Length: 500
Image (cartoon, rainbow, N blue to C red):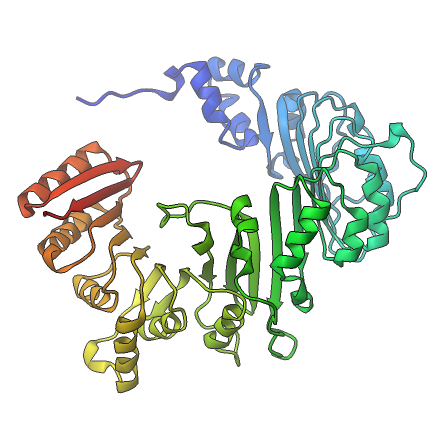
């Protein structure tokens, strides 16, 4: 017997919690005239909204009716300019795009809860000095991001008194900023913990850095590849940033400008996996996206393949496009990367042929895991002699132990993959439905005696305990081995225990 629960019969507390996941404008528009219960609820001072679209521009009254309930507001000032004043007394986060006048911000200091402010000037300001001066007077502000698409100026006065010092802790300068300009901004920020800005030299950076800084974000262009030096940063951080907790470094190696190959790094490879970086859990990740290679140093984030704490082998490569901009081949991209580091984990987001995959994997002999979005298979009878040689070499050389498939494949394809990757001991696959999972598990159990693979993870939408119990019974019927099975959200894990 099914039980029907009406949304309006839920408790007010639960409805308010659900409202937090939706655009406040849509909630007010949809529920205000539904019935008296919802009308009273959405007008209650206990309900706070996030307005993050321009839909309310055509309905100014709706915004005015609920301005005292807004905790977050995002809008485009080129369509409408609202006077943000003290009546927005719950506003904590404000994002304004296409701002054209500083006057629009003149009343922000009256907001008692404004902690976060993002201003996108587009190409409307060539001088940001007044904007920064105003922002630094906001008493509660902790986070400020300024965006501009054009070359800008920003020079603050060097004469500072205590009343002019800002409480800002997070500054994101998404605009051009010279060393001289930045040197006039930093003295206003004694509590700065996180700083993000365009690249400068390390010598100039020493003049700006606050030793209390906890987060540092830097972007470097391809001509600054000499800064991709682990020892250089290790000594700099130990000397000037003793309290640094998180790093977000991006080194962009660009293959444009007439297709000139980027300069190869000539320093010592693999030093971003030294004890200094491992202890802080700052991990190297690399992305090939269209015509660029991005080298990223970011805080550790657990991935699907991890079950141990060997941070020295977490270097991860993501290929967004398996056929980068010509005339360069994927081999040239990988050669640039391998000159810097070994690769232990590979993720490919595009559909890739088995032949192209084998060429890539032969260049990455240290790979332990492979994550594929989609793979296309040729008829084995159509494989050329050269491709056959690649496959044989790959079978002998690769050490891949874990495989993740985003899209399901046929049984014949599994046979080929298990042949190519003879060391596999873990398989994860997005099955999409229970029928395919059942079919695949039967096949895997049938061939269990010939394979090393013992641990499976099946991702099934709407997986539940009932589905897991069906798979449990299927294993009992088709295998004499001991096993464990458990469900974590929509993932069902099956571990076949080898009989002694």
